[in-house]
Amino acid sequence: MTPVTQKLYTDDVSLLMVLLDTNPFFWSTSKSTSLSFSNFLSHVLAFLNSVLLLNQFNQVVVIATGFNTCDYVYDSSSSPTNQRAETLLRKFEEFVVKDEQLSKEDSVHGIGNSLLSGSLSMALCYIQRVFRSGSLHPQPRILCLHGSPDGPGQYVAVMNAIFSAQRLMVPIDSCVLGVQHSAFLQQASYITGGVYLKPQQLDGLFQYLSTVFGTDLHSRRFLQLPKPVGVDFRASCFCHKNTIDMGYICSVCLSIFCKHHKKCSTCGSVFGQAQTNAPSTSNQKRKTADT
Image: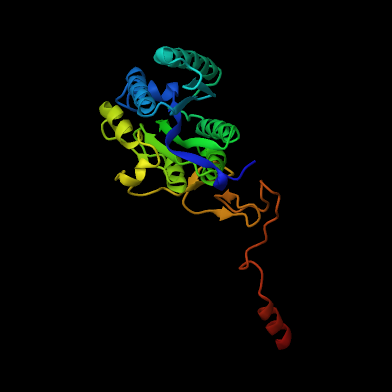
């Protein structure tokens, strides 16, 4: 495969991968967001139309991020222009019904977590297929419209996707719709050079999307885009999947644990005892000399 640095990009043509959070547990909770799912789709559809109108060669791909599964629901390169809204809404309805049926098999407490790691992986796989199609490519970027809380169990998979996007030089933009900030998306946007935004007024979501995320990567150099106040760099432990401030790290595979273990559950390395538990060599020599 041709190295990423040798790829030729068009400055004003974009390949926009949009990841939409369709978690039914998030949208059915009134405290999660003041925006209904139908209004959310109307804002997103208007935004997608505006991106495609900016340049006739722009391409938009939409991936639905559910609670149990992820799937491609729209691709502007293979869908007729006059059936854009109809195709997108029909695919969304089919996906949401399938995801809700899978959710009924297991009981869920609270809002639940969406498969952010799965949708990120699907977006990167699609971008890789575009990279291999020829020498001239549109500028790829990923936009995450996410509302569900972070799933600590997905920490490793999400971080792997983030570092893969960084290596491919694909920025990950984040628009958080929930009440709380997303540590995963804060790190994703910071590491890949994307934009992180948590809108204050969700009723004006289209204005936020069009003014912040509508422009191509070349035009961003001339715009004053919002910058995050801070980034939550906390990690999740591999043993209990909890977010921790301080922990133990395996020196071989860099796995993170919230408590000391005798053996690494990831690579099998045996951890040594703490130095304070065993007497030092100098003390042993001193005791031998005294006797």
